Length: 92
Image 1: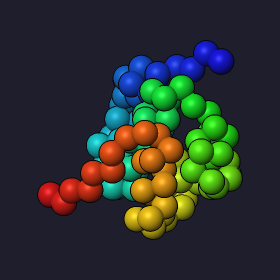
Image 2: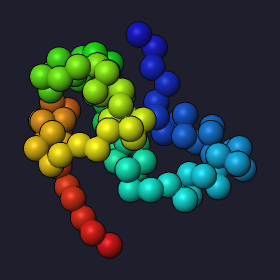
Image 3: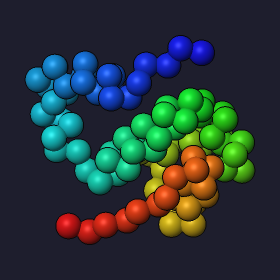
């Protein structure tokens, strides 16, 4: 499977002024989604792969990545473990 890196995709997308304006106004939910997508792609995992490792469904991963799902802290821990990455939460 040939996956475009998220950083490359974002870099290309930010060349569009309308997208860039929306990106700069992104809510924390979108930043969370971005981080999860980036970690998943870096792990060379599909949504289905991540769902299996996190004991959930691909549909839930899709909803998480498009910010239409409000995850609990325990769910985010499961995702971090499945991605083999630490979970960091910070406030400004």
